[in-house]
Length: 134
Image 1 (cartoon, rainbow, N blue to C red):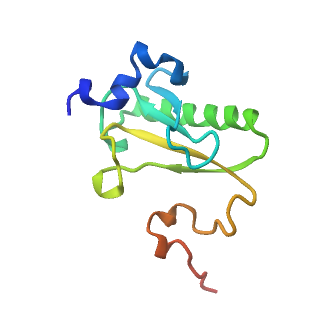
Image 2: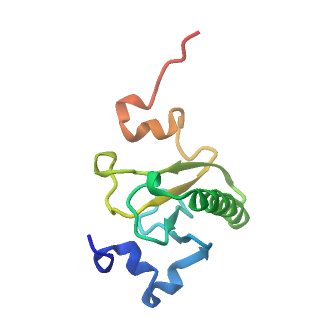
Image 3: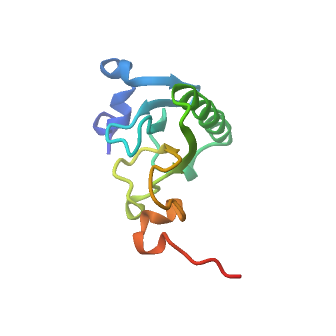
């Protein structure tokens, strides 16, 4: 896919500037267009690369800084946020629909579902719940 065909490359352009809520050296941040919860956020690599495994060491460092900055920003916007799911769909078989690295930061609140046990294991629903061995 060319950069002109890539949604996240286009989002960095002037037509979408109002959608960007934060920028760092290597990443920009927007709210998800199809949010799982309020303030569901996408941390998107500025350069067009498909995978987390393609990040440079400087980009990894900047990503961690951006992730922590967004955790703090979201908690300031909504004091009911008590936890987060952090997810990367890395590759088509993992559900990646846009081949440009983006990380989902999904705010969670106490009681937002009956039993959150298993968290991200829910990507395969029958594997989400597990019994702990004693």
